[in-house]
Length: 585
Image (tube, rainbow, N blue to C red):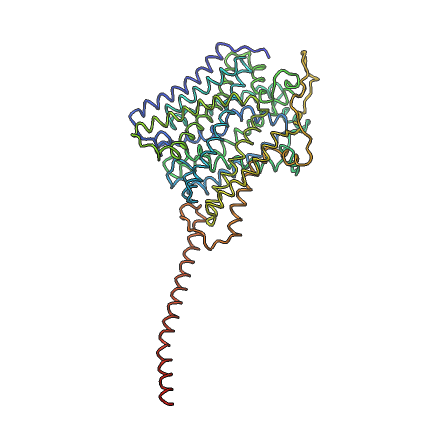
């Protein structure tokens, strides 16, 4: 691909990075006299509704949404759009099951709930370690995405792009804290939507209208909405997207540190619930744009697939390739798109750095170090910056991934599914104790991790896009498959299930074990649970049952006492009768 990054493009990209950095500097200067670490991490419940809402949206819709989802729709089908139903369900659960519990706890680390609920500091530290490992690896994947985009459009070395993007994000996150993160997310979310609209509008014009785009997709058989096939090896079916994709969103909205940290930073529960419900519209709209972008790319390259023609290496490069090829006539547009992809990466990474800093300080360091308030703030800033540097190192490894969307599902699903299920067990099952909780978590992660490793060691045959090269008007080199794969037979049938099922396996295995094992063990000797740690509906039932049990025990005790008194009263009468009989004799 021959494309030049003009001066105007450089100016647009530089402006986005500079604005992001300046926002961090502004909030660092504004809070320069503050020595409150909670203000740095969660905003002391003085965050505003609009930026928090936009920040929650941006935290989910990273560069993976701009690169990975369109690519998967291009190769597989439009079926991924069904995940919008999972978005709705997950937000309703977050607003009515988890928010009433988490908001009243006034916690910084979401895993503090697990310690209180299961009376296990070890469980809290374990889940924090797993969350940090999962998040830092995921940050590397997210950082790799925009670096791929910039390399495809400008030809700049990928290492330079990774270092530039990662350094800017680490700088403003460490300097400005949660307030800088949420306000930069506002700018970045708007840029991401702009990037989608650029591709959709231009691609629709080239295809003869959006109707023509959908018609082309339908003719090729990828405009699928209700594929009710029970083939678990197929990547996208209605069930894999609805269930597996739904678990992905539940992990995010209900129990992730980044999201809970944001809505708990709002002034009251009403605002927090409002922010969640506004995300139904915002996230669903953006995911829809991402899926439609995949169809637009298919219409543009149906008869001249750039991957098959060896123009680009991966389908994750389709979006930047399209922009460089069709929008480079107008100076600044390529730079605007690259800025959009950068924004997707920056928003997710800044959320990750901030949340990991919160977990690290609250769960591991605070109890061991006795520092002054000012030193605590600077230590937390240093932790956030350190995670930024670590993500840069990990991003260099992400170039070996065949699909960024697949990698994100497998990575977050294995650990995140089990941890999310543990939170569900905690709020709805008062009879589950810490031993069962740990066993359930290991069981869920163990099974899903085993399948994930098997899918890496024994990869299945990759799906071939329903495209051709018959419309290419240039000399090309036919792409040859370089990845080895194994036939789907024997035990490999389990390893070759569609990757959206990974989080579902981890989640439901942990949930089932946490709910059923206590029932087989019996619930009579279970330790009482603080009702405030249960979701409102379960809390009311549990409190009523406890009151009835207490009342029943009290009545039983009183009854036993009355029987004892009665026996004691009857004893003298019996003695008197015996004495009279003896005298009579």
